[in-house]
Image 1 (cartoon, helix red, strand yellow):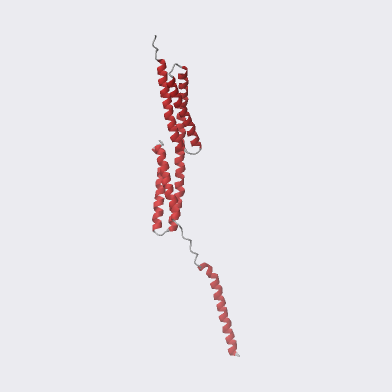
Image 2 (cartoon, rainbow, N blue to C red):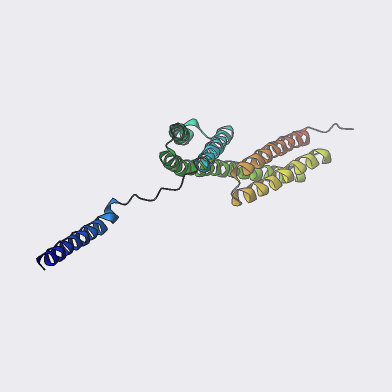
Length: 221
């Protein structure tokens, strides 16, 4: 009988120990659980847009420089392009070191900064286009008045026609330049307004020639 009681006592102790251990293990399991693996980062999908953005921004700045935007005005954009290029180089280095997450973060940060450069360059182009459109508009107004003057003077019809034709071309080009600028195409507007300016100068030269010929004294018969 004593043996049976001892056996039961040991059995309950064993069950208690097991239950206690089970509770402890259950409570500690969430803290010790290994976090699920992160999905692999496709670094190439981050690097490609940054690389394309750097090239696009460089083209925009080059176009602005060719259009006559000063080096001082373009200095901040050039500095930003250099920073974006550094971010691209760093992202590539991290990718080669098998650090895809860090490489992706670096590429994303560089892309955010790079995307601002193109907007800055386009704004500078737009400012330059607006200035040239204003200059050409003034030229067209002066040429139009000159053509009116020679039309009433004793000028050769051929000279008047040449001046009027160049003036019409300048006015049409000026209108197209304004339309392109309104369509957010400052580069196209600059190209068109430069042509209009050349036509306007031609109209002015033809007007001066016609006015000079009209001032020549006629030979008496």
